Image (cartoon, rainbow, N blue to C red; front, side, top):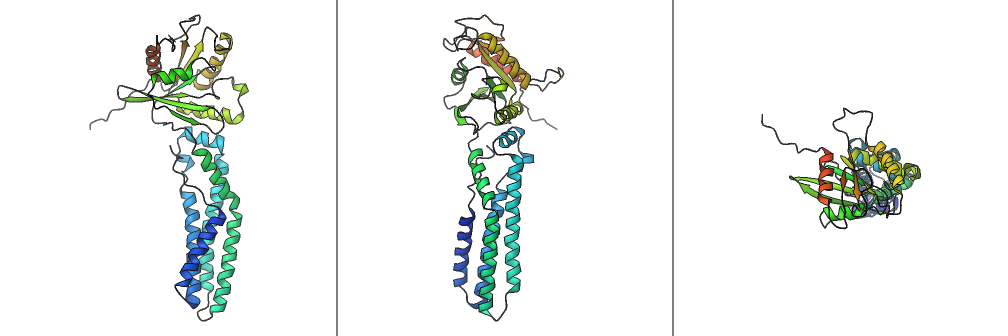
Length: 329
């Protein structure tokens, strides 16, 4: 996952302590004006380099997969993150230029004046770091949020499982995928996101169960959740919408079908029937041992196991995914 390797962002105080302590050690190795010059160079380099490292650790949002970019925008705000990164870039360049400026002003034969100028430079570097204190804090908090994203891979075919709570989505994902399902949380929902994997014909498919996002009507989602759903539209190759015709899930079938149309409108471009790369959409009736009183593409009972593999096969077919084989020249 693109954000999982983001390092912890140091605070302004931590960077200043690091820079000035290293500068003090460098100064002790020399004497007179030379000591002051060494301290200036060391502090300037430590601050500038570490601030630059903060910025370069972040990916270019223009090159991030649209799925992760929209999630990042939903959680931390891409434009806001860019603004804070820009401020840190300014601070990196400013601390570098201050070092050069004051090194150029050092007298060759007056250690006392050199010490005074070095202290003045350190004070100005400290002021620069004070200016970006909030920027560094924002980036560290953003990093903590982004690292919690579930490890979903946009380059692998994905089946998004949707439907009202208690219709059997999680049980289905658990049943058909391996025992090492990944469970993570989107930062904007307290409910876990379950990602399971299943392999067919040497292709690994992801089954993504997103409680808190696709288990209620759009008008009940907040703005951040809506943007998260928008991000999922970049990911999905197929949507498996699960219904419970018996309504033992606690929701009338009529409401379930209304949600189905809501989800279908979100993921499927019904205005472009020629779109061969569109998202496949199928309705699966679970708890078929209790009722099949609904028109569906597949019927199954996770409880009894009947029809589960057929439903999974239909979902895989709905992705329309084909393995790209290398071609010979």
